[in-house]
Structures are given as C-alpha cells and as structure tokens.
Image 1 (tube, rainbow, N blue to C red):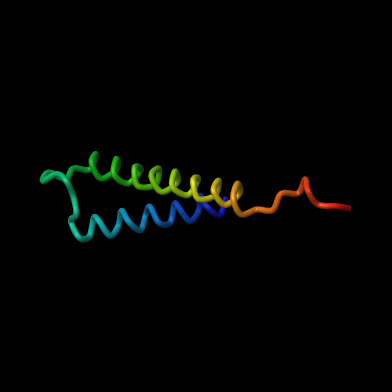
Image 2: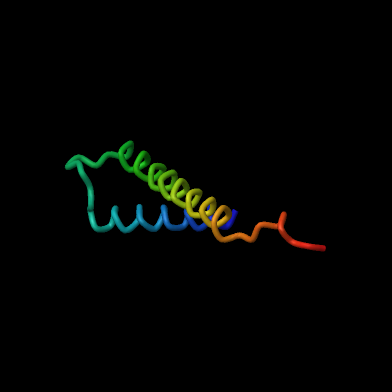
Length: 69
C-alpha cells in the first residue's frame, strides 16, 4: 500500500510540474488532454511502483522456508 500511495504522490507531482512548465507533446492542451495525462501519470507511476515492490519482495526479502525453529 505504501508503494501505491507514493506512486500516487509522484504521479500527481509530475503532472503538476509538467502542467506548470508547459511540457507537452501537443500545442492544443484541452481539458480532455489534461485529464487523460493526469490519470496516465498515476497509472505509469503505479506500474513502476509495482515492479519496485515485486523486485524488493523477490530479491531482498529473506526466505522464511530455510529458517530453523
């Protein structure tokens, strides 16, 4: 859940920075474009966070099957 929340924060931050600095691939920025870009940033950052979390779980978390009681 922490990964999703951080991805949400990063996605909104990137969207805000790109909107304020007028970084865009199109000259006509409409409300539909802004809404689509807003949700795309959140989805893209969430996918990235998912890969980071899966990598952490699969690579760095200890394997509990090999522990002795």
